[in-house]
Length: 169
Image (cartoon, rainbow, N blue to C red; front, side, top):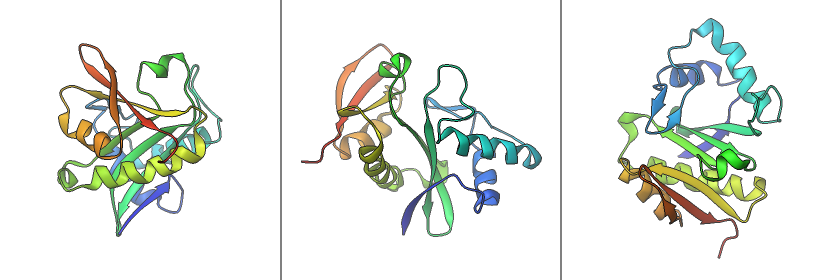
């Protein structure tokens, strides 16, 4: 069974192991905490939780909630939901970024995780469309977005810029 849970202190041990093992940049998903020590993760988790309330944000950042995708008792992915757009996000990373651990890829986990996150986005974001970006070198992620109602709005040399309607049909 899948569930999407915001970053929290109750799940800190599993969250730590998962976050620590994500590369710094995986297909455009940026992890600020690769190889972080367990000792330093307490503060990092506090920062992630504070960011969801618009607190402790770096200059130019918007409030964002970090969610973990769980399958039964295992974390299989991490999702970021930025609550609204600023100019750098409009033609940048958009509202959503996500990462699925390599051993869970190709099994529909990203599709289900994105579906669950879109439900949250529809309650949170202020814009009429959900903005996403995917590198052209990552066609599997583009398919995940398309399975969730996404379409390519435009592209540049490196990326497709995908939109999903906020309102359900």
